Length: 166
Image: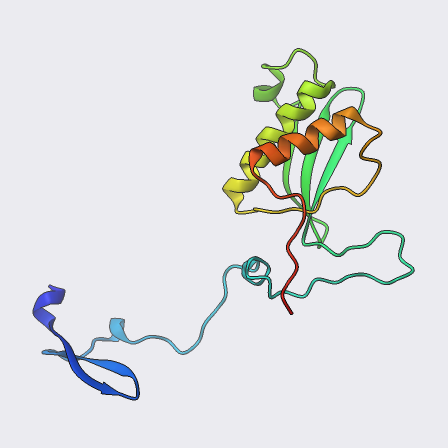
């Protein structure tokens, strides 16, 4: 139907734009609205255009990230989550989830941390999170934390967020 309406692109250009000639007039459906509503609030973050608040110099915890990786280890389970700078949890994976717990021998050892990391990395990539800020604590002290971070790297998630070029 589009081929019957359009004769093709003519060679005449006005101000660098090509003009389409059609046999019938445009309908209401063909008119493009001049108002644009952004329905993706993370769009500016993905294009590295959103403001990344670096915090203040005397603050103990710096909030110079958009998405932070959080690793929690308790006596019953191991969990990992991705937290937005606003404070809400974007993704959360725990070794106490039925599907993960069923495949683990222990819910608190290094293999559980690696399994939680691989599931969290897959969910991050499915949600469109390609890079998160890794925890800046004692990395060498905990073998479970190191296994968790290695599992995230192997899953394809960058553990440092990119900085905007400006």
